[in-house]
Amino acid sequence: MQIQGLNASLALALLRQLPLIRKNPAPDPLEIHALRAQSGVINTFLTKQFGMAPGVTFTDEFTSTPAGQLRLRVYSPAQVSSNSVIYYIHGGGLILSSVETYDARCAHWAANTESTVVSVDYRLAPEHPYPAALDDVMAGLEWTSKNLEVFNATKIIIAGDSAGGCLAAAATLRNRDESTIKIAAQILVYPMIDDRNFGPDPRFTSPFITWSFANNYFGWSAYLGGEAGGEDTSIYAAPARATDLSNLPRTYIDTGTQDIFLDEDTTYAHRLKGAGVNVEAHIWNGAPHGFDYFAPTSRIARKAWQARFDFVRRISELQN
Image 1 (tube, helix red, strand yellow):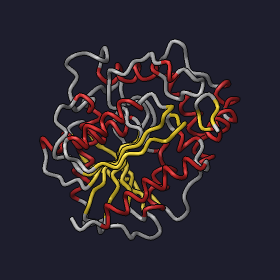
Image 2 (cartoon, rainbow, N blue to C red):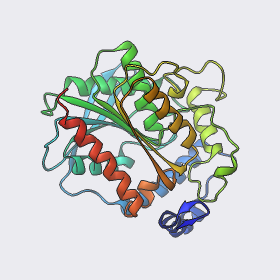
Image 3 (cartoon, rainbow, N blue to C red):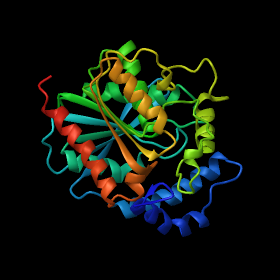
Image 4 (tube, helix red, strand yellow):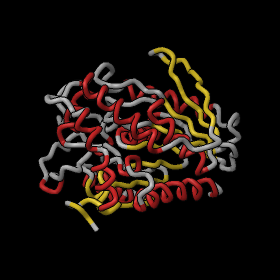
């Protein structure tokens, strides 16, 4: 059953959050400090609802970069059976969120894959436009690679959701072109990868659209330091701009039919496949952006999480 195109259980979960959203509405016009205040309130509520996976501990590590000290949070499950480290990049439209707001989700990854998870505290736009965030992600990737033996691991799986999926895809491209770190796989969860995606689109007019075209334009413009959608956007800023997707690692990508990233994500999956990349793609019917977090116990969210965890296990079992 669906409600205005949305999976019914997800729609009901969003409706239960309406009092909080009405009490903390998005600013009009959009303004970064007000957006962050709203995001903080909603994230606190969702984190409490999501819950922390038992048995996972974390510590903060630091590495020096030209921009200063970069913080990396390392999540350790009670039992580590995987030979992969998940290098995780948080979402937030390139302008919101932090390592702390992703504690519950990173712990969930660690507990359910029995893998060490490393989360990078990258700099946000608009204070730090492109390429600051990607530079931080690359520095954290290098630190993770150098510390694989410490984690008793042999593989890196780079992963991220939304803006984190953008940075994961971008880092994978830049690593292919400029570095020598071996990335076993990339996991792109409803990634934000195309700065030209402004809408409008009649498919995405439901009140249940959790990340709007206006949000998207604001986030991209802040990140690019000017108008989004221009002709000279780098492939390392917006990975959908890349014309050559060959020689990239195995890829998991998912999105929902009520997510404004549906077209850019499915197109990217097809183009990766056409370039010879091993791709596993999932389209979740009736799912909007962030559905796996605001309704984690729904059947569709559980299926999505399980598909991602299963992919990690398969990568860890591969001989190369």
